[in-house]
Length: 314
Image 1 (cartoon, helix red, strand yellow):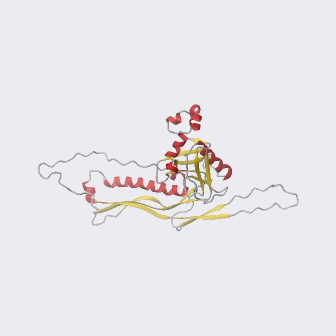
Image 2 (cartoon, helix red, strand yellow):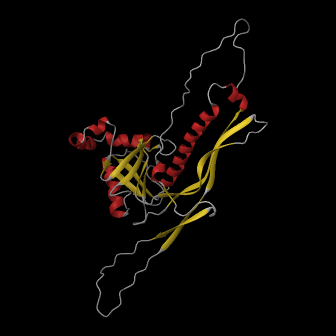
């Protein structure tokens, strides 16, 4: 498809030239955060096949008593090993353009295309990583200001009728720590990534406002939430990663997770590539390309294994 269609701007008389700004304006981009919380698979890369196997060791049960009796052997316990696998895929997109367009355009067309492709690449990777977090078997659905329900079969069976707030943070944190035994992401903290609407539910919660009124009144001014019950909150506006769900789109979707949640198997890091010039140099293209895939380490809701809680709706 030609980049230019030439037309006369007057049937006769003096022709005119419209002045052009020297600045190239770019459309706004959604922010990407999920890649910061994905761990690469150690020891995997090029020349190692298309699939990597992740080996997982289950928790050894605590005995009723570990006391020993003199003259008797130490009792033996058993443990189980399971595996899951991640199969990499080729990913990428390209933008073609012509030398004709480049020769006539005031701006550096190739650099502009490369910049926008890098932006697109970041969004695609963010969406792919988010999709794996959302495959978590444990779902939490807010069903009111102070009510919520857990589903542990990988499917949310109830419609959300409330937004994320301090009560729900407390419920999910306690469930992860006390029931699922999920280890924190870092130190004592879990991480929560939510769509802007979800975090707005906290900021409008009287419990949160009252708490910060005397402890840190600047957080509202700075549009911050920080940590609540050892859950560190991070905001995103990337609609393809996290949506607005529930009755009348009341809930800003999110995930809360601990250590060893999602990994990335990578053969070739995504990179920009320029196509060899075709048609005697008239046809050109720039692309980004990579070989990788993301995987949920523990695709289960079992205590001691599940690492992610997906806050969502049916």
